[in-house]
Image 1 (tube, rainbow, N blue to C red):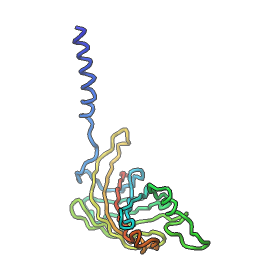
Image 2 (cartoon, one colour):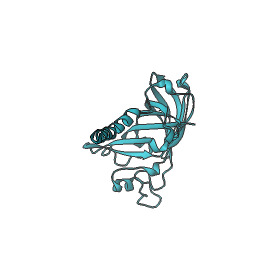
Image 3 (cartoon, rainbow, N blue to C red):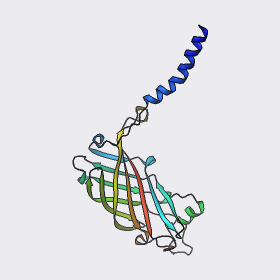
Image 4 (cartoon, rainbow, N blue to C red):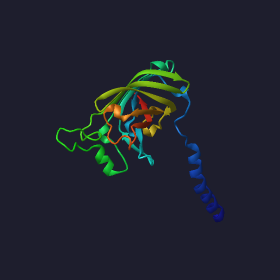
Length: 213
């Protein structure tokens, strides 16, 4: 009897984690039917803007902008009417090199001069959509990007990533996510330092997460 009890206890110890794992499910899904109409707010902790430049023709180099704010207004029955506004804190730019991050935010060498890149007190960047052309689970989103005090039109190629409700212990709210790709020329925004040794073309990859209001 003692042996059977020990064997049963051992089986339960092994089986319980497996059952718990099987019961857990990813709350998000690539099912567009889960997207509901309304206004969504950016989740700043899970939204990132990755930028990549060519460094001397030897390698790509990328960094990040994080903690953006903004909103998305969306009706899945009329996706072409969607509106998105995003503000990106340039001052929080992040790279893997403290020296490079410092250079991006370095003050001009001369009083009244122009910084090489953003400078120590850069204004937030801002993207405001002007048109959305939707096709299935993808869309071309055109808008005005203001960076370094200069506004230029930019088109983003957006793909639906997933939707659903977060677990109850995480708030139980509706969530929505997208991936977006785009390209800009930094010289058009007055940031031409180092071109062409460091490429003028900047590739953008955006992971955008939203929570339903």
